[in-house]
Amino acid sequence: MREEKIYDVIIVGGGPAGLTAAIYTGRSKLSTLVIEKEGMGSLYMAHQIDNYPGFPEGISGPELNKLMKKHAMRFGAEFKDAVLFGFDPYEEIKTVKTDKGNFKCKNIIVATGTGKNFGKKLKGEKEFLGMGVSYCATCDGAFTKNRTVSLVGQGEELAQEALFLTKFSKKIQVFVTSQEFNCSEQSLEALKNSDKVEIITGAKLLEIRGSDFVEELSLEIDNEIKTYPTDFVFLYLGTKNNGEMYGEFANLDAQGNIVTGTDLKLNVDGMYAAGDIRSGVLKQVGTAVGDGTIAALEVIKRNLRK
Ligand SMILES: Cc1cc2nc3c(=O)[nH]c(=O)nc-3n(C[C@H](O)[C@H](O)[C@H](O)COP(=O)(O)OP(=O)(O)OC[C@H]3O[C@@H](n4cnc5c(N)ncnc54)[C@H](O)[C@@H]3O)c2cc1C
Image (cartoon, rainbow, N blue to C red; front, side, top):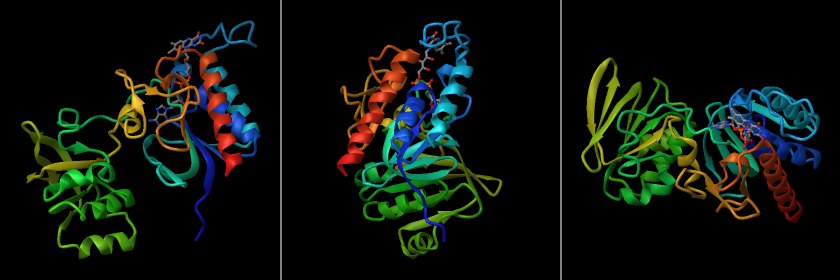
């Protein structure tokens, strides 16, 4: 079996902040993966940039983005067109989760700009966020002691999270969004062996309902609409927006921007933020480039200490 690559750094975001960071880390011989939703981001929307040094005639935003990307590639940065779903950053080897699979690394730079949401919310998801709706069983599992919980989605992450909940919850309903549960055989076996767990495949979540707190889910299963009572629902559907993902690992301001000190560190070791996503920064190409430089140099310093 091919061994999974562990990157020295994964940079999420392929705008000026992320690409500058990739130039620095790549040039320092750190293996670098940039995860970006191609063609998105503020720079792509900028018709003409007239105030970034080196382009006396001005340059279009997409053209500047393209040149920065080419520059990062020259120093070996790899690219993946994918949408960020979340992180598992607490161990030395961290995981970045996307719609194209999970990627491993030692450091993470978050440079996703002001882009807020690629995922569409489900009915009830926003209303009950924090009131029974969660995206992270590892974070909120302890609140589910002796309660009925549901998980909705697909894959190994969901399987692992469901197994984690067996330590706390009374009953665990696993709603798999396709007919097959694509997780490891060991996890599937362990779930099937737990008398707390029920696995329901081919399920489409339609609505989360309740009053003050989540009370039930409406799902379409085998062309039938069914209602399942539940106290909590953990979603692995890619509907989480950027701010919701970062809040677990960083302090956010009222607009959902990440608050950092001058070293651009988040609350988890080896995790940094750069560019427009940071709180209090003047949102310009020049400042994003400066941020990318600082975050990359912090990663390079951390790497030298290891
Ligand atoms: C219309 C317009 C005109 C502008 N004009 C100027 C100007 O003249 N001069 C100037 O200096 N600045 C200008 N700006 C501001 C400038 O474009 C931004 O400050 C700068 O691009 C910020 O860089 P960034 O790397 O932080 O974010 P962005 O450029 O926004 O890049 C963010 C990156 O993150 C990726 N991303 C976001 N969310 C996800 C996700 N969930 N999963 C995967 N990838 C994700 C995006 O695909 C993108 O690659 C303008 C902005 C706009 C919108």
